Amino acid sequence: MNAAMTEVWQERADRVQRALDKRFWNESIRMYNIETPCEGGKCNDIFHYWWMAHAVDVLVDGLERTGDQRYAERLRNFHEGILARNGGVWPNELYDDMEWMALAWLRAYQATGEPKYKAAVQTLWEDIKTGWNEQMGGGIAWQKSQLDYKNTPANAPAAILAMRLYTEFGNPDDLAWARRIYEWQEANLVDPETGLVWDGMNRTGDGAIDKDWRFTYCQGVFIGAAVELYRESGQPAYLETAMRTFRVVQSEFTAPGTGLLPDEGGGDAGLFKGILVRYLTALSRSAPEAGDVAAFISAQAEAAWRSQDDAEELPLFGTDWGRRPEPDETVQLSAQLSGAMLLEAAAELKPGLQG
Image 1 (tube, rainbow, N blue to C red):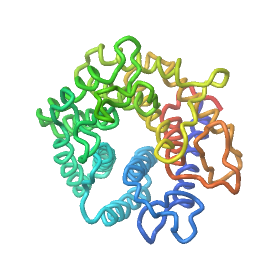
Image 2 (cartoon, rainbow, N blue to C red):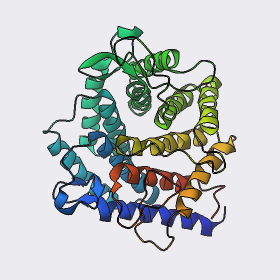
Image 3 (cartoon, helix red, strand yellow):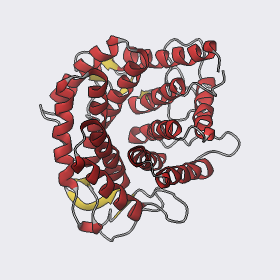
């Protein structure tokens, strides 16, 4: 890929980051509005804790890619805004939400060295570990009020977090946690015949697995967990497992003809594709010989950008990457964050991208 095209994707990622800043940031609360437009901040009647965690992640993407200290300044303000909105503490009732917040502030700590980010991660991790129990044979619960409901959203990100904590700080207990959580996830919520990742089990108290709940998000976080264990161990089986689930994404989660990932709806689901792309990017970095992973991300980014007006200085993304939101359409923060994750991935995986 030539230098000019590299600069094109860098500039596109910059524009999406500026859109996030100009169209969503609310200085009065030191957080992002949950949608745009949001006159007077009236849209913020619900605190979407885990959306804010992914917004932290996207800011770290921009900081790592550019080194621009404006991202670091925004992270400092954002840290205080989230903490204030959550009552001055980091934990909440949902284990998966806390995992995302811990993953994001761990990356922020690695990018900045800020001690208070590390402290937030350590506080969250100690709380997250209390979610493990032996109901359903182990696993971390989804929420504190339903300790017998175990799902992929609460376990695969926890394995990623534990593994990254071990890599960063070297505590062997964290490595043991990563392996234990991953092994439970793979044994209970991954189809052994295909590699499809199921969402959860015992949601309604009958022990059943929600095999019909098929989300890009679940595929992504399991791929991410397998990649993290591969990086630590070098064992090819982890990488092979991740690639098998990627093949499921290719075959069962893309539209015939366009190859685009699905529109999974708004709200929380607006984040799902972006999360998948984030961990496919990690897979691509770990298995560069499997060029079709990078090509897959490239195709999503190219299609999403073609749907935009290339002259738009502050582009917005909806839940359908094949369609640009109408000028009068409300755009949710979750969908915009997914678009930002996609463009940051395209900027990172520069080789192989076309115009």
